Image (cartoon, rainbow, N blue to C red):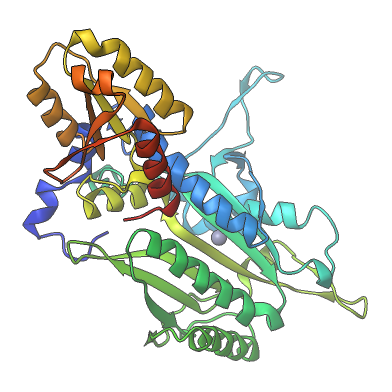
Length: 416
Ligand SMILES: [Zn+2]
């Protein structure tokens, strides 16, 4: 949640209002705290998924997908059933053989970690297999109080760009160092500068003190190696390992915690009996890094919408160009242009309602469409288009091929 919610800009620029204005998503009483994503909203979702997948493929991750619904025993093992049950959705499904409700309780996963260990444990792992980076774009459910739900910022169903990295203690520094680079690179695309916080061993810590010391030093070294300034939060780590929290500031000056690089020295390794075989053929316990870059896609999209006040960069814009025929007479030419734009991979729409051109231009502005293309007699006979960029007062006359080439370049560069 934003640290300073009292700022008046927030209400004027609420992501729920922008979502409606841009036709991205809606909320309905039948599913409190869960967004219904419209076609245009899904485009933002897909672009963000694409970006992170490209990065993770290069970084040697394996993408997995684990069940949304599993038997409660998974969470009994992880401790969620004991400590987190009120925040979970669970039920007893109908047992067809018994003709009544089953005694086997199922739960919707509130996090991906426990199930990721089943993939790790599905075969014997050697020290050579580590680090094993299992990423998952996982859909999670948490039974948040209806009073605290807040659009995309706090939802009952959300999607995480999660990963669990299984590794040896001597691999922590290198792995965390690449994670810091990854986070910095991805945030820079949105104009966010990360701020790092290192949290160390709390009073009530579990695990070996030596492991803690080694882990903390590795995190520190990784930050130093990348010349990243950080603040120390002493004794603020989780009971199972130290962590690096990563915050950003948005265009309204609000701080948001997005990513966390959480080291897990004991919890998953012990609860789920994780092991690998070392060089000497001995069984060893790996460590685990829990990490996310965006955190929740839903929340991240909410932050982006407010940060950009709805005017998303071209590559993220659901509609990248609107084609406006001057009148009905030019609908066919507008249709041809639309076809060419779409063939070139540019998301375009024709706005050919009976409204005046002025009104249609204003409508495109309200929808924050980056490029508005007007076509009439002059353009059709000359074989060019008249284009105006969002926020600019100038119109340019260009050949369609040239416009397409420029737009593709801008999309490719992910320019802000
Ligand atoms: Zn996790």
